Image (cartoon, rainbow, N blue to C red; front, side):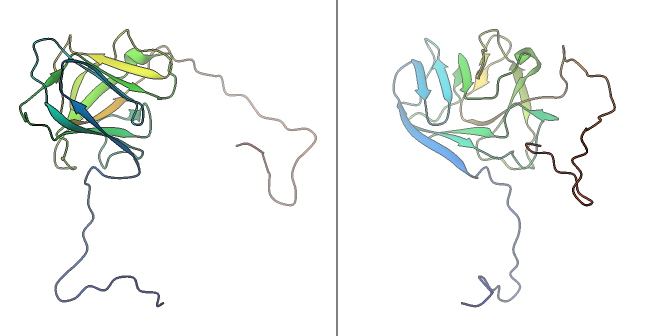
Length: 193
């Protein structure tokens, strides 16, 4: 085998892509009634409210385990984002009563986090918009958003993040002294860092 895996002919060139794809997991579920739907694989729980239209068919839930090409906030709750695609019979604009992301890092300040969304197939040229702050139903390992402040659109990419943290503790700077001296040659080795 040569060292070349691809050759480009003529005026062709390679372009980078910011499509919402990457490593992670997907799950296909059938949404044919109002109520709660849970995807253990992707960590998504969603509730369709009474009186709301529903997809009436297949929905693909995706958890992408890398950050999106553009982030809507300075900090991410988890180094991942989620995408929901509707392949059901009804293709209308649906809203959710509640959307919960499970298996996320624990946080003592869930109220700092917001839900951002954009169209399910959008790339960097489409901006994210803020859908609301985490609800009081959030708990250790899960963060929930409800439709009280604004509707939660159903078919979308979702990102959970914040621009700043409140109620954080800062630690005073102190000089670190090591004794006995663990220096080996000209290198310092600290296990676990």
